[in-house]
Image (cartoon, rainbow, N blue to C red; front, side, top):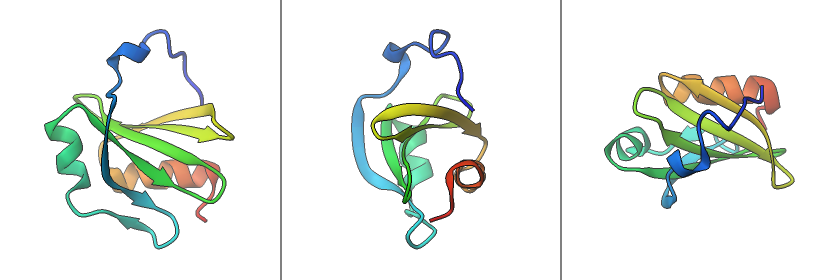
Length: 95
């Protein structure tokens, strides 16, 4: 579900992209993705059939902004990447 982004502020989000992520094509979370997110202010992607997610670490949890047709439609948070992937996929599809 969407949340008020004014509390987070776009300046708080990482701007450097890494070449690690999650994919619904094979249900894979790249090895080292969680550690890379925790160690630096970077983001990776979650690729789904009907959405694209931008994933980062906010200092206490993993965060994913879900986009459809380049529009932010939801933000999800979880303690682990597998939990985050399940939350997002339950809402936006496992394909």
